Image (tube, rainbow, N blue to C red; front, side):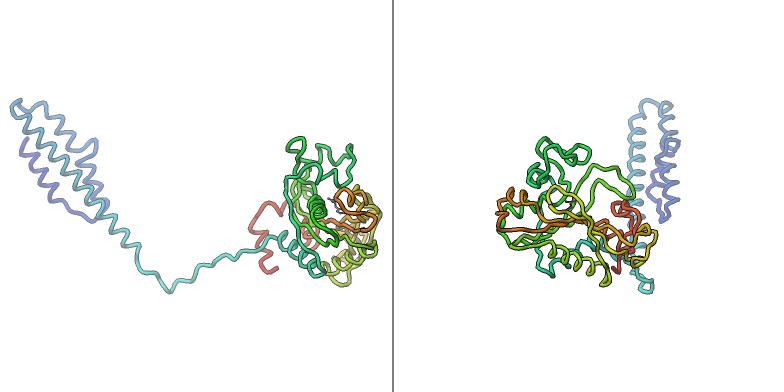
Length: 338
Ligand code: PHE
């Protein structure tokens, strides 16, 4: 019995390998549940009592040596495999095709709009997305009972605060803090409690514009919008104004541009009308000027507001608004060269 253990100890000491399979067989033989150790421990009871101590110590030596050998060989083997994968780079391999990023189409169009208006002297103003009732509604002449304040359109945060439903709120802040002449646009995210579909989303982007000075007229508004439409959709573009209503402007209008796909002849996109609606506008209501501390007997002004998604959809012929929010790279990649 003793000889047998001593032989095994020698075997362990002499064991060498560079092969993982052989090392695994070694582990199973010396350390596995059904290995030699198990048999030896079982036969322990047959060892005469006076030899038990010595036999036990031998068994322990065998166990420790087997473990040590296994750990040593294992770490040698894994160091070797690492070395193998650390071969010098193969310089003949083709280079990895790096993905080139693209600007989001909403950013592209927002930047274009900012660029078009900055060329005629408009500054850019920004404001908070969480607004109080005053800046989003009251200062803008929304009557107390106006349906746009209703829970259905507005995400309220508490009784006095909501997510802004338009960036006209920024213009109130600009009027409160600056003296005319004021010429500014406010791009930003807005929020409305709408069911998400191909044509509507609860988050979208707007650019609203404001011009306040002495003797600003509706003709100035019309010409500014014609300039914008031609810069954005091409120099042959025509605009059409239809009377409309907004609490903060009087008179108010909705503006259509001639369809950039059929040049006004009539097609599916413009529903055979030859025109596409792009924005709302009007002369700032004197009540709004007074609410913001501007003397309406001296100053007048106009305002307009458009959805960036809408302009982007028309410009790139995108028919589903949800594409802007899904961030699918197959969609976004198409704007790499834009
Ligand atoms: N604030 C309006 C909207 O959110 C747009 C608008 C702005 C209309 C300025 C007229 C004047 O739809």
